[in-house]
Amino acid sequence: MREQAGNTRSREGEKTMAERATSWKSQAHTVLDVRPELEQGGEPFVRIMEAASAIKPGETLVIVAPFEPVPLYAVLEAQGFAHETEKVAADEWVVCFSRSV
Image 1: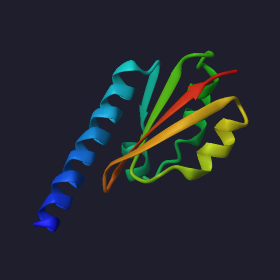
Image 2: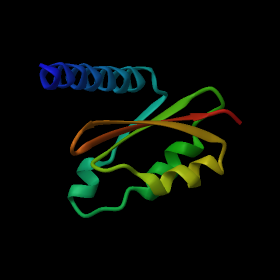
Image 3: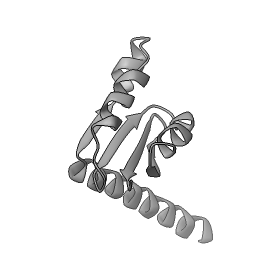
Image 4: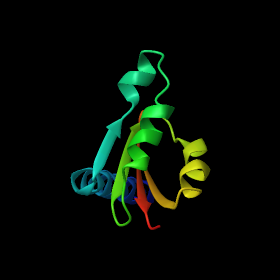
């Protein structure tokens, strides 16, 4: 029984994460899904930095990637961004970058 209860809680948690990610996407100033570019062998860093430079204080930039984009955290933090991250699926990470400065 415990295993079933744990599985239910896990599924509920996943649903909550997906809902949060969906909410971030719908409320963001800019959403960049970089998965297609990465799948084609591209490097989306310049496009991400251009999008970030257009974000004003109080606005958000949401990045959708096939992995957790850890290197972006420090780069965008240096530009006044905080972040929240959700793993929605094995190949979908959603990161909400909020500019405070």
